[in-house]
Image (cartoon, rainbow, N blue to C red; front, side):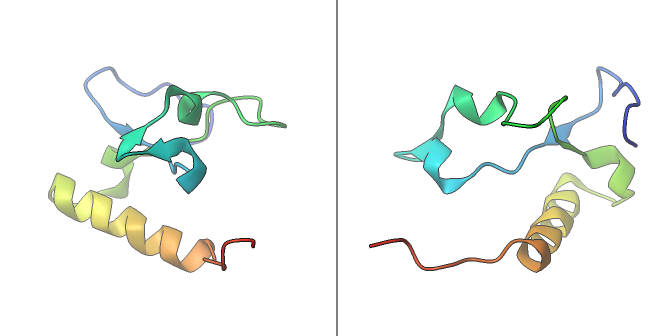
Length: 75
């Protein structure tokens, strides 16, 4: 729902690149605007219309798996 305010009680998720995770902790920089972004890109979990948080997250993981390609790390 691009541009719509998210109610305070609702939840969002953001894809974090592997480079923003260190020792299992997500860096604050993962939540900063990326180059070229005008707003923070997130997924509004309640808009997925899934029955539980686990199915909401699983649904996002499936979308990410289709959209994002995993490549080999550069040498």
